[in-house]
Image 1 (tube, rainbow, N blue to C red):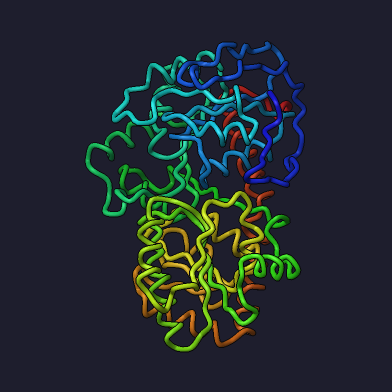
Image 2 (cartoon, helix red, strand yellow; image 1 turned 135 degrees about the vertical axis):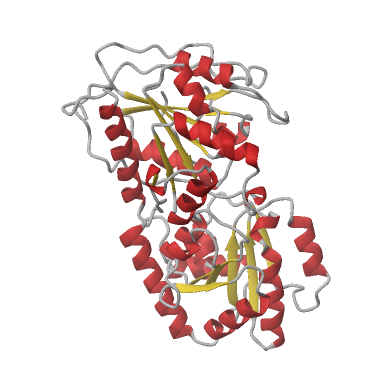
Length: 435
């Protein structure tokens, strides 16, 4: 399989996991997938070479595009390397062809269903893909890929893992009864379930009527070598964006969708400007809320000329370096990769007290928390930080230290490696000497 090349989301980590004593099998190949063939299975089945047990992992996801979960898969694939593992990706609702080409994934992605279809019963299709690739491990992520668990059992896959990485808008008030039942059935088919935060663990255990002990927690990690404060780059990026030397740059990174609630940040910025603070707002990302947010800015004399929309960015590290404070005003979060990136970049973080945010941000030590939608509360925190540069610096240093000590990418890769090998041994796929 060709090396997975990360261009639009560069991954600098080399394989940090110890090499296993397994001789790699001959690499299976898949035919290049043309746009016409995108919804068919790859035309060259991946045959298994007996006696040469490199662990095969099939990652199943709802759709492959440029998002946090997708980038997390790339980090795992590249971090684990190809000496002990062979990876493929299966999507339920297609993939962004430009993204897959940019990442070097042509011919490496199975597509089980169709993008714009409603309910799709894909158990048979998924089982067929699994019989062709013959993985040792199937790892599905989030609700959109949950059918992979019963499909893995139908097709005799030794290890089935399901993980939950965040929230959708319709999950905030709890899950419908039907979805709770389906989750319980799918979870029962899984060898292992894990979430990325303790809060998600408690939520999904409660929704699926399971004891918390049935679910593990494997937190995300961030490349702390790539995301780091670079004063020279910071000044250069600020100049390119047209920020004045006196501007206090408050930024946010993420898709422009309603659940991220960027309007709360913009309203807090209006209050700061009224109080004489030279604020500039940097919003990094694209999405369906863009026009609404631009209209809000255009209608505000205070915000006009002070808010910069970058659109989707292939490399957010320089943009984080241009910020003085990072804000995440989301109504709900799983475990935010953008918070981790901001912390690693030495930024003080102000985030809503939801989801996994309190597990990342130590309040009044590496940042601050506020209640979702609380414009006045956010404005008060930002004003205090705006008027005290020493406070911002101290919080930023503490945030960087916390990211390095507790949320490194190397640590995350090691956790995934240990989990895959532990379960492969348990199911007899690997012996202790091989792992």
